[in-house]
Image 1 (cartoon, rainbow, N blue to C red):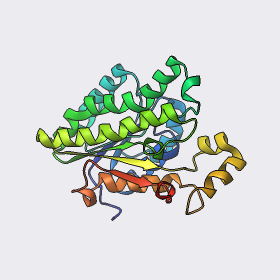
Image 2: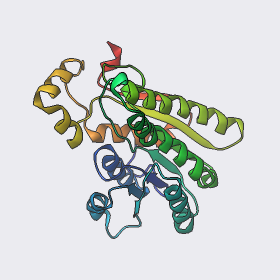
Image 3: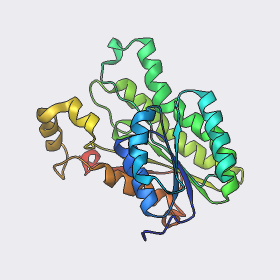
Image 4: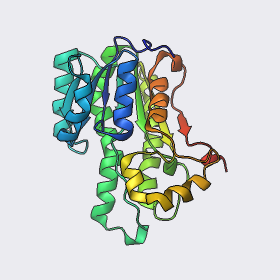
Length: 251
């Protein structure tokens, strides 16, 4: 993929303050896209945004679980750019606990951040994506949306929902003449600060033994996969999933 393969494209990335989201924003900008970086943590987002100062890019405070925030975001993108070419629904949150130790409030929070957010983003940004005439949605799911593990039940349910929602949206867009491709990315273990702090050195070593390539992914490696699906190189890739896990799900 050439560095300019996304030149002139307008992209919105949720959860862009750090981790996969920030790496995706970097990768999109490097490929020529104009990016709207969004996150609920505006202070962290401004830190990420600092490296793009002077360009056409925008920072936007967005609670992905709040429909009113999506309405505001849609109006801001419409007023500024008039269209949206790429939507990356990346924002997510994980909380490891057994199903029968999960309260209903915890369950609802997991689904709101990981699944409801994808629906809201898709629903509200669709008119702007249609205005593109050649748009792409990339939804960030997880290997836990494909295979389960002890303590990941609620999270897996949410991420599996993202997986199937992506397929359904792709089929419905095609069936109704909307030129919007929709795919999902399923990262394995990724070396983000939150993940590394959560599992610790012992946890990292344990998980690496389960990955044929013997290591965690870098956020930039997930971002590259997202950029591929968002680009014209993936013009006939639709309604499918791209697993980026170092071989974890192959075992």
